[in-house]
Amino acid sequence: MLNLILFGPPGAGKGTQSEKIISEYKLIHLSTGDLLRSEIQAGSELGLKAKTLMDQGILVPDEVVIGMIDNKLKEHRDAAGFIFDGFPRTVKQSEALDELLSSYNESISVMIALVVDDNELLARLLNRGKTSGRPDDQNEQLISKRIQEYNNKTKPVADYYQNQNKFVAIDGIGEIDFIFGEITKAISKFR
Ligand code: B4P
View 1 (tube, helix red, strand yellow):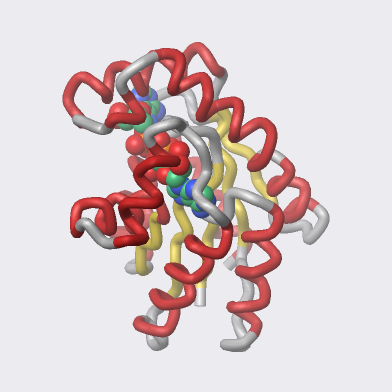
View 2 (view 1 turned 45 degrees about the vertical axis):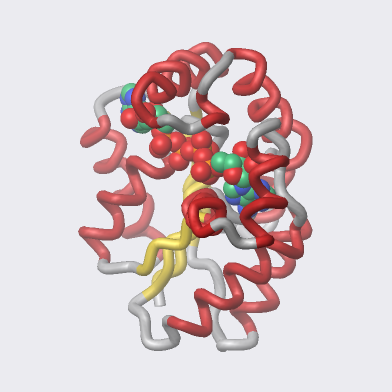
């Protein structure tokens, strides 16, 4: 299996690049952001709890997202591989993912990190907020809170994969297709 993690701050382009990676490599897309938004839309108990946190730009509890990922891995046992988008976001989630994958005799192939500065992130998310209807894209204060959560809780996840020699950083500013080309070059080295 080819198991990729697409990593980066909110608005780095993880969702955008995931779509291209999926169509090229036929991987199953696991976006914890999308999974949580579906729970919210369905009005489930989990969704209602998650919404309160997401609307404040705060990460939802590790146990919730780990459980969602576990369910999806079980559903797709014969997949060609997975792309993890927006997960893991804490070191605890990384450890849990390693454990889950090893229970299927699988492991992460590589983490690809998209590097984008804070000013560009803010501009992209405010722009997306004009059309996305996402409550967490609506104002500068909330977006700054998400970037702060990323810096405090998520950034250390990069070290976790760097220590396993499975980490590649790519400039996330520029043409979407050019960035995708750089991602495919990185993947070819870890296949
Ligand atoms: P996510 O849904 O993961 O949202 P994101 O980080 O904002 O999105 P992404 O980086 O994918 O941005 P995109 O490509 O769309 O998370 C939302 C919330 O859910 C979190 O705050 C948290 O509360 C919760 N959550 C999710 N996962 C969790 C977890 N594992 N643990 C705990 N909580 C969790 O790009 C953004 C914009 O930039 C788009 O408009 C796009 O068109 C544009 N763009 C992309 N690439 C570009 C480029 N190269 N140039 C110009 N614009 C570009």
